[in-house]
Length: 298
Image (cartoon, rainbow, N blue to C red; front, side, top):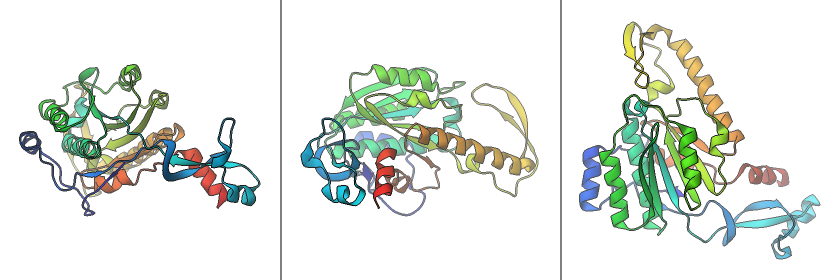
């Protein structure tokens, strides 16, 4: 899936008022439309990569030039021609209400849904916090698109709640279809990568953070009273300790990235200052195994 749009950093975010305008007029901002392509190998015509020959593979798809170069048998894979269900899972736990994360999440969700709509792919929506908040089964058409945007308008992050990844993924497993699923969350809770490996669903993670969550500026000082939005616990924050915070956050984000990579799940971190179009299009659409094979045969 590719999304077209401005290359300027910091794509405009949609307010709830602008989302309502989309509902009323069925009109989308210029940067939203995009192109759709299957992310799973199939029998289409666009070359996708090479993998080792295995039982049941057709001899006609063997790449003989690679055979001559490497001495091993590889078959060509192509992008599938069939369409796929796009599922959007949005984290509506309390921490997502901080700063502009909800606006960023809504804007990206509308963009991805519009991309699916304009290419005749089905798309659905799952809003989750500590439990199911709203579910829109996959569908297509402007009326379905309006239903999705309407849900984003009327649902806000839930107070004093945490995102329960395990129960959310268990719900996804029970849905009677396969999907290309985008999970949009700040992922501030501990991550169990096993939860994200679900047969029949290809999952991509968009981690959404405010810039100051990712890295605190080096010119802060003073003490401020803070409240954990998910637990209600109060604490005193010393802004002068920003070096320690930045080290801890860098380590935490690296751990999340490594866990997702280990599970074979593409991910990218997006802040409101980033161009999310560029970030999403940069996600590697090939499975890690295919990348390793390509590297080996160069």
